[in-house]
Length: 193
Image: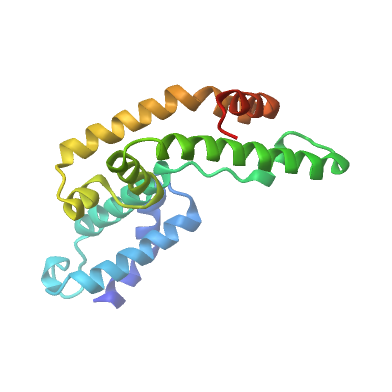
Protein backbone atom coordinates (compact mmCIF):
# COMPACT_ATOMS: atom_id res chain seq x y z
CA UNK A 1 0.00 0.00 0.00
CA UNK A 2 2.77 2.50 0.90
CA UNK A 3 4.48 1.84 -2.44
CA UNK A 4 1.28 2.81 -4.26
CA UNK A 5 0.91 5.93 -2.09
CA UNK A 6 4.53 6.91 -2.73
CA UNK A 7 3.96 6.84 -6.51
CA UNK A 8 1.79 9.94 -6.04
CA UNK A 9 4.26 11.73 -3.75
CA UNK A 10 4.41 14.81 -5.98
CA UNK A 11 0.62 15.07 -5.98
CA UNK A 12 0.49 14.86 -2.17
CA UNK A 13 3.19 17.50 -1.95
CA UNK A 14 1.30 19.83 -4.29
CA UNK A 15 -1.84 19.35 -2.20
CA UNK A 16 -0.07 20.44 0.98
CA UNK A 17 1.63 23.35 -0.81
CA UNK A 18 -1.82 24.50 -2.00
CA UNK A 19 -2.75 25.04 1.67
CA UNK A 20 -0.04 27.73 1.83
CA UNK A 21 2.47 25.54 3.61
CA UNK A 22 6.25 26.13 3.18
CA UNK A 23 7.98 23.45 1.07
CA UNK A 24 10.19 22.05 3.84
CA UNK A 25 7.20 21.70 6.17
CA UNK A 26 5.08 20.26 3.33
CA UNK A 27 7.58 17.41 2.94
CA UNK A 28 7.32 16.67 6.65
CA UNK A 29 3.52 16.67 6.53
CA UNK A 30 3.46 14.25 3.58
CA UNK A 31 5.82 11.91 5.42
CA UNK A 32 3.67 12.21 8.53
CA UNK A 33 0.70 11.18 6.38
CA UNK A 34 2.58 8.05 5.26
CA UNK A 35 3.26 7.18 8.90
CA UNK A 36 -0.35 7.79 9.95
CA UNK A 37 -1.73 5.69 7.10
CA UNK A 38 0.69 2.88 7.91
CA UNK A 39 -0.09 3.07 11.62
CA UNK A 40 -3.86 3.61 11.64
CA UNK A 41 -5.28 2.13 8.43
CA UNK A 42 -5.56 -1.60 8.97
CA UNK A 43 -7.91 -2.23 6.05
CA UNK A 44 -6.33 -1.19 2.72
CA UNK A 45 -9.78 -0.96 1.16
CA UNK A 46 -10.46 2.19 3.19
CA UNK A 47 -8.00 4.13 1.06
CA UNK A 48 -7.92 2.06 -2.14
CA UNK A 49 -10.64 1.88 -4.81
CA UNK A 50 -9.08 -1.01 -6.67
CA UNK A 51 -5.77 -2.75 -6.23
CA UNK A 52 -3.89 0.24 -7.62
CA UNK A 53 -6.25 3.26 -7.34
CA UNK A 54 -5.80 5.45 -4.24
CA UNK A 55 -8.75 7.26 -2.63
CA UNK A 56 -7.32 10.74 -3.18
CA UNK A 57 -10.04 12.44 -1.16
CA UNK A 58 -9.17 10.39 1.92
CA UNK A 59 -5.50 11.33 1.54
CA UNK A 60 -6.45 14.99 0.92
CA UNK A 61 -8.48 15.10 4.16
CA UNK A 62 -5.64 13.42 6.07
CA UNK A 63 -3.11 15.93 4.72
CA UNK A 64 -5.43 18.85 5.44
CA UNK A 65 -5.95 17.71 9.03
CA UNK A 66 -2.21 17.28 9.55
CA UNK A 67 -1.59 20.76 8.13
CA UNK A 68 -4.25 22.31 10.39
CA UNK A 69 -2.72 20.56 13.40
CA UNK A 70 0.68 22.00 12.43
CA UNK A 71 -0.80 25.50 11.89
CA UNK A 72 -2.61 25.39 15.23
CA UNK A 73 0.53 24.35 17.08
CA UNK A 74 2.55 27.02 15.30
CA UNK A 75 0.03 29.79 16.02
CA UNK A 76 -0.05 28.94 19.70
CA UNK A 77 3.39 30.45 20.15
CA UNK A 78 5.09 33.21 18.26
CA UNK A 79 8.78 32.53 17.99
CA UNK A 80 11.10 35.43 17.33
CA UNK A 81 14.70 34.87 16.33
CA UNK A 82 16.60 37.39 18.43
CA UNK A 83 19.48 37.63 15.98
CA UNK A 84 17.15 38.17 13.05
CA UNK A 85 15.48 40.90 15.08
CA UNK A 86 18.83 42.57 15.73
CA UNK A 87 19.84 42.34 12.05
CA UNK A 88 16.54 43.83 10.94
CA UNK A 89 17.33 46.95 12.97
CA UNK A 90 20.61 47.52 11.04
CA UNK A 91 22.77 47.60 14.15
CA UNK A 92 26.48 48.05 13.49
CA UNK A 93 28.87 45.27 14.54
CA UNK A 94 30.44 47.21 17.44
CA UNK A 95 27.03 47.89 18.91
CA UNK A 96 25.73 44.34 18.39
CA UNK A 97 27.13 42.88 21.64
CA UNK A 98 25.87 45.79 23.72
CA UNK A 99 22.49 45.79 21.99
CA UNK A 100 22.25 42.02 22.31
CA UNK A 101 22.87 42.20 26.05
CA UNK A 102 20.28 44.95 26.38
CA UNK A 103 17.86 42.86 24.31
CA UNK A 104 18.48 39.80 26.52
CA UNK A 105 17.95 41.84 29.70
CA UNK A 106 14.72 43.34 28.34
CA UNK A 107 13.41 39.94 27.25
CA UNK A 108 14.36 38.47 30.61
CA UNK A 109 12.58 41.32 32.41
CA UNK A 110 9.48 40.82 30.30
CA UNK A 111 9.41 37.06 30.90
CA UNK A 112 10.04 37.57 34.62
CA UNK A 113 7.22 40.12 34.90
CA UNK A 114 4.74 37.78 33.20
CA UNK A 115 5.90 34.79 35.29
CA UNK A 116 5.57 36.76 38.52
CA UNK A 117 2.07 37.86 37.54
CA UNK A 118 0.98 34.28 36.79
CA UNK A 119 2.62 32.95 39.97
CA UNK A 120 0.79 35.58 42.05
CA UNK A 121 -2.54 33.94 41.09
CA UNK A 122 -4.05 31.17 43.17
CA UNK A 123 -2.58 27.71 42.62
CA UNK A 124 -5.41 26.44 40.38
CA UNK A 125 -5.23 29.33 37.92
CA UNK A 126 -1.42 29.52 37.93
CA UNK A 127 -1.09 25.80 37.23
CA UNK A 128 -3.79 25.81 34.54
CA UNK A 129 -2.27 28.87 32.83
CA UNK A 130 1.26 27.42 32.90
CA UNK A 131 0.02 24.05 31.64
CA UNK A 132 -1.77 25.61 28.70
CA UNK A 133 0.84 28.15 27.64
CA UNK A 134 4.00 26.16 28.38
CA UNK A 135 2.97 22.78 27.00
CA UNK A 136 1.70 21.67 23.63
CA UNK A 137 -1.48 20.26 25.15
CA UNK A 138 -4.81 21.29 23.69
CA UNK A 139 -7.73 22.40 25.82
CA UNK A 140 -9.35 19.00 25.25
CA UNK A 141 -6.21 17.21 26.41
CA UNK A 142 -6.06 19.30 29.58
CA UNK A 143 -9.76 18.69 30.19
CA UNK A 144 -9.49 14.93 29.82
CA UNK A 145 -6.42 14.68 32.07
CA UNK A 146 -7.62 17.10 34.76
CA UNK A 147 -11.32 16.11 34.63
CA UNK A 148 -12.22 19.81 34.48
CA UNK A 149 -14.93 20.71 32.01
CA UNK A 150 -13.77 21.96 28.62
CA UNK A 151 -16.00 25.04 28.94
CA UNK A 152 -14.44 25.97 32.28
CA UNK A 153 -10.91 25.61 30.91
CA UNK A 154 -11.81 27.57 27.75
CA UNK A 155 -13.26 30.45 29.79
CA UNK A 156 -10.29 30.46 32.16
CA UNK A 157 -7.75 30.57 29.31
CA UNK A 158 -9.75 33.33 27.64
CA UNK A 159 -9.59 35.34 30.87
CA UNK A 160 -5.85 34.67 31.27
CA UNK A 161 -5.19 35.98 27.78
CA UNK A 162 -7.18 39.15 28.48
CA UNK A 163 -5.47 39.78 31.83
CA UNK A 164 -1.98 39.27 30.41
CA UNK A 165 -2.73 41.30 27.29
CA UNK A 166 -4.15 44.21 29.31
CA UNK A 167 -1.26 44.18 31.73
CA UNK A 168 1.73 43.55 29.43
CA UNK A 169 0.78 44.55 25.87
CA UNK A 170 2.42 47.95 26.22
CA UNK A 171 5.63 46.30 27.45
CA UNK A 172 5.61 43.88 24.51
CA UNK A 173 5.15 46.80 22.10
CA UNK A 174 8.03 48.63 23.80
CA UNK A 175 10.17 45.51 23.37
CA UNK A 176 9.47 45.23 19.65
CA UNK A 177 9.92 48.98 19.18
CA UNK A 178 13.33 48.76 20.83
CA UNK A 179 12.35 50.93 23.81
CA UNK A 180 13.99 48.57 26.29
CA UNK A 181 14.58 51.29 28.87
CA UNK A 182 10.80 51.70 29.27
CA UNK A 183 10.39 48.02 30.15
CA UNK A 184 13.01 48.20 32.86
CA UNK A 185 11.54 51.41 34.25
CA UNK A 186 8.04 49.96 34.40
CA UNK A 187 9.21 46.73 35.97
CA UNK A 188 11.15 48.66 38.66
CA UNK A 189 8.16 50.92 39.23
CA UNK A 190 5.97 47.83 39.70
CA UNK A 191 8.48 46.34 42.11
CA UNK A 192 8.84 43.21 39.98
CA UNK A 193 12.63 43.29 39.62
